[in-house]
Image 1 (cartoon, rainbow, N blue to C red):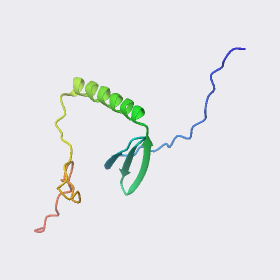
Image 2 (image 1 turned 135 degrees about the vertical axis):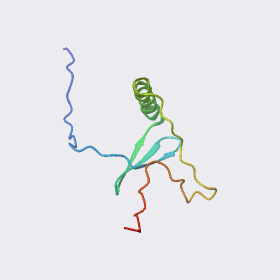
Image 3 (image 1 turned 135 degrees about the horizontal axis):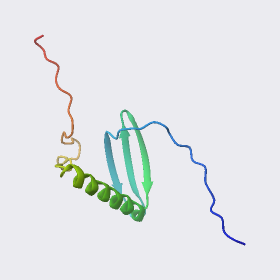
Length: 100
């Protein structure tokens, strides 16, 4: 009897979401990804091997992007000693002009 590939039906969300914030929590058995889009946050967990595969895929995708468009200049956000206030990074809204 030959093996046949089995298709698993998936529900695909037709919308595209922009990640506005992300936190990563590491543990022995799993890595937690808190991903925020607008005012909605979801928590995903992956095992360390799968997390490394995601990292490798992102590294390859970014390397391909940089080969085409040039090197990206960026840095990781930092927090102060008591871990309560994150450094501002990315796009910041402009203050409203008071003298109209």
